[in-house]
Length: 359
Image (cartoon, rainbow, N blue to C red; front, side):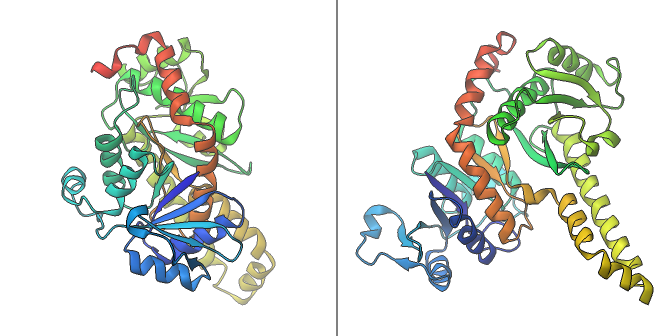
């Protein structure tokens, strides 16, 4: 298996990308590849104790082969360009042919890489995936999924979509439920995942016409659909998969992230105001770190772009080395269980969704 990661994506690249790859290599035997400016990435790998194969025909291979001191394989694929968050995604993908994102997705398309991970521009990653890989046959709209903590349960749920489709139709929401259930089942090992739909109320008749029809489709499907869930109840983890459109999902996710940051900053402020408070903070230090970790959903790994014809994971933009490591580890079951193929089979097996590819 060849796991390819964007060496220049995210706020802390390429240093934390490389360090994350080193951490992951201690736990898996798969080849880990980094794409980016060749000299810079090679220098950083050498600084981590990796040795380049001087006998390799780099031009013929298309990459520089490395091994670390434990004999684990690494590769460096050259890419001289970077797509920034300030660029229009469609234009950037067409313009920056030698960017890490475009070249990385293209390596998945050619079969040289089994999965591509990037903490770079979400829009470019989604657009590049659609233009280069295309949609799975039968999928109307892809969905970006992300893990979200179940507060107090040391577990996570999957929310899909959180940004790919902002103008939903009922069938999209049904497909998000199907794709999310398959991913949670195969990657997390959850049998018969419980699915709920984010809505303005828990009752079946709540919401606009799109969500009312989506409720009917989900209820009539073979999914383990438990009904609607309000935003305030999501963090308590009543289910394994939360279905929503990209507009509401993105707002929910960013709002939750902001609230978590406010809580942690307020706690820190209050616990440093007096000597007694500082003493209490010292005594509760381990529990405070546990709380911070529980609220940080980026530690769970990458967010899959479900519905495109290849394995792509979006990693949080401010990820640290441990987060990149977790994303690489999550990539292994994604590829081993062939999530893309399983989604294709499930979508085509649903008669209500036949012909969707012609939309």
